[in-house]
Amino acid sequence: MLRNPNTQINCEKCLDGYYSYCIQGKCIHGSIVKSVIGAMEAYFWKAMGVYRNIDTIICCSDFMKKELSANPQLKDKLETLHNFIDINTGSVTNLIDGDYVLYFGRYLEEKGIKTLLKVACMLPEVKFVFAGKGSLEDEISSIDNIENVGFKKGDALDTLIKNALFSVCTSEWYENCPFSVIESMALGTPVLGANIGGIPELIQEGKTDELFESGNAEVLKTSILKLWGNKALAEQYSRNCRNAGFYNLKAYAEKLIQIYGKG
Image: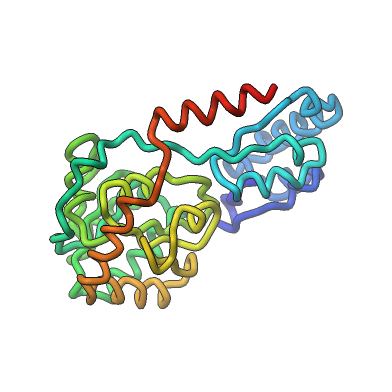
């Protein structure tokens, strides 16, 4: 299940086990040679029936579980266990006082960056902060109402997240369980997330965050303005985010041990 590099379309054609589609679409890095090798490898493991030897596959989202269940050898061996977040959320006490919308992550087209840049140009009154790196960095830096602060991590990133009015997760490919959503919510910052892949299952729409149609610039624009113009709503979401109930490391490990114990 890849985003075809030639068409930039999310592709599920090989889910039924006919991997020749990978060759037709040159789906592995746009290379016919790599795609042939990838398809041959997939057919080899299918013929060997190797998946019958697996007891359990841990999926980091219900979305991944649903996609993998298309394989009859796997569908009864799947368990969902969302990613954990190792942040001291007890120290997050301030209400939102930020004056910017935050994007943090890779600067790539499949992350919805071009759609977000289009919307940023439509909203000159909104300040955007981008934290990350990638091939679209020059385009990002050329827009007046975007501040590109580059790649950040640790306390510097946490501070950017906590001080944002809200963050955006604009992906246009299949995310499974993005840490950007979990980390933002755990730090009390609401997320405007694309309704694709595993993103919606992390978001309680209308309670902690908002969803929008992935790749739709007009809907994204409307959704940004809804939160940008309503700080009280953003603060309400912020309070609810802190009780979203994500796994911490201890709870995640305990759940993991339970799954292994079934064997």
